[in-house]
Image 1: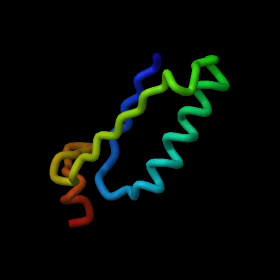
Image 2 (image 1 turned 90 degrees about the vertical axis):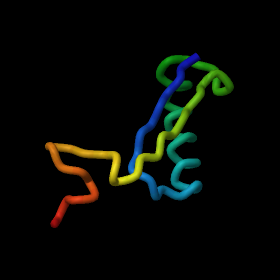
Image 3 (image 1 turned 180 degrees about the vertical axis):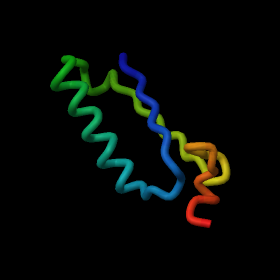
Image 4 (image 1 turned 60 degrees about the vertical axis):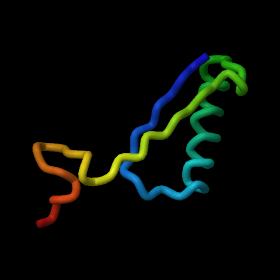
Length: 63
């Protein structure tokens, strides 16, 4: 019963997420023998005001 959480900057389309879900699920089935229906994937969409790397908010990159 894998539970996979994917954290992304907001802005991805539902179609992009559908493709990611399909590919992640396929890998779990192929590599771990997990049943498709047992794979749970959640997306956490984070606004650029709440995401930082290297001490800089993504919102402020390039300023």
